[in-house]
Image 1: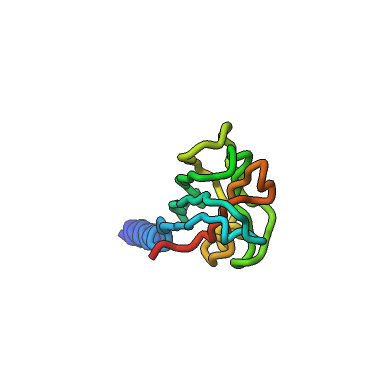
Image 2: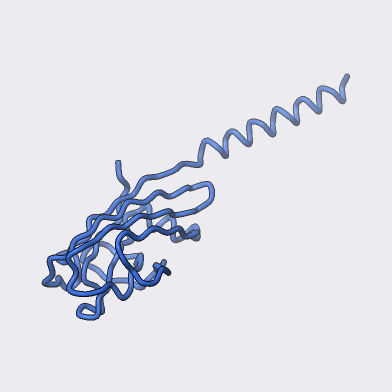
Length: 146
């Protein structure tokens, strides 16, 4: 009887621990509006785009979808950059690996805990580069979609 109580207690403790972990995991929606005015320095382009994404905090998986048009030429690169506030530049964190880079772009990436923290703090931006604008033609700060 005493062994049965201990077993039941262990099962209950395990279930509570699992429920606590599951309660902390979430899928967070993210978005960014891409335009030339958000580039640093701003660019002269009629290009625009929209990024929608989700971050699964249980797996650290970022899933993203980007549409764009009106660029000065073909996209030659696209990246998530950070950490950087609006108006500041930073190095790439996650590169788009499809080729050619055409709209729409769909992808996934597994983030480190530090990358996830910066992304959720609004310190990442998405950038699309062209030959005419090698540093980036359109850009948008990635923010939580509340």
